[in-house]
Length: 487
Ligand code: ADP
Ligand code: MG
Ligand code: ZN
Image 1: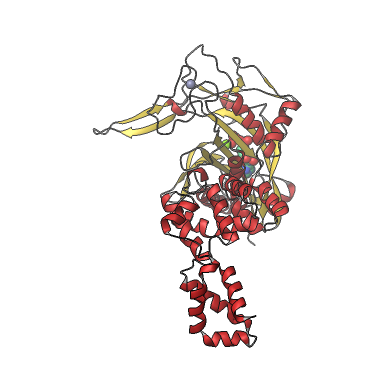
Image 2 (image 1 turned 120 degrees about the vertical axis):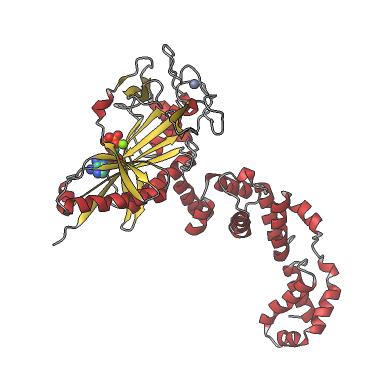
């Protein structure tokens, strides 16, 4: 009889924080595209005798994240030196929180096939990023490495879970939700492609019996994963590898693995180091950090709303259905954009329909992003005006469809777009001759309506709209036609 293997996954996520400056010095944090070793100072270069100072903004972000992940924030915390020799670690140690992290024992609710389940977070701690090594080969074939310290000392937050994942799907659901939380808090970019967010998955398998008794087997850790796709592949690969080993009667060696993208497999990197290998000890140049309840409460009260909280608010206080609420809350910037438009024209359905219909189509067709709506050619005020004019009939449906793409093309508001396109509303008083024409040309329809078949009215309205090239207000037209036909 074959054994039914159960999966165990624990996750570690490193994310850079969007602070102005580095974790322990005043160097700018934003080093993207900068010349190597231009965003450095004696502190982040680890010159002897230099005194680090804790970045207060990073602390606040750490506490904010801990609270959003339902962790408790201990009354004090401190940094320790994690010692290891590697060229990307210029000081020879990394300042990190070990015994006293900034957050502990939280959870994130994730959706699984079996319903909502809490995925427990073991700890949230702050540390500093390392420098970046580039391994190169010269024209004459020599191998050499370059070290760029711009990244050294960038604030980094690590979030470690309990081994609560029971499948690759659950792991990915947790990671997606975590990334959304960090982005909505405004403390991380969530960008995995450039290493601002990095994933590690720990995987093991066990029998159903071991699961019932809470026994864990040896795990392997796959490091430095930079996409949700790869994390899923790596987990699935490791599950199969472990099962195969056990079924052959072999042991799994606790190890650190890398991901070989070319061959779609994990590769052995090194046997797993133990915490005591790092000789952690408290950083003597930094005082212990103390947080009062009032300080923590102040952060709790001012922390930004999370995606799932926005969705619930859109459902409960704006009366939107779940589908539209999720679309409108798909990015922090887009939800702010929607609410800004709503602030200027308080018609939820109209504004939502403009945004989720033609607006999203334009954004997608043009390959634009909703990550930062301030960069879009059309402002929230323009959207409010568009929705208002559409609602009042100042713009007809066909005119609306003409105006919006033009606004995206030229980056202009509704009125200039209408002026450029020669769009005017055909005033009801000027429609007489058109009505005459349409009624004369559609004697059949007229007769049907007059004999009680009012459904045909829509057809006549359409004919008038066509004759005015969409410039009349269909509501005006219908009223006029009813008057003429005496119905
Ligand atoms: P490190 O990798 O730095 O040694 P930890 O010992 O704290 O850190 O564990 C790292 C991660 O491995 C945690 O997310 C934890 O839940 C997970 N983990 C621990 N044991 C197992 C196991 N047997 N199977 C799967 N994941 C595990
Ligand atoms: Mg680890
Ligand atoms: Zn510096």
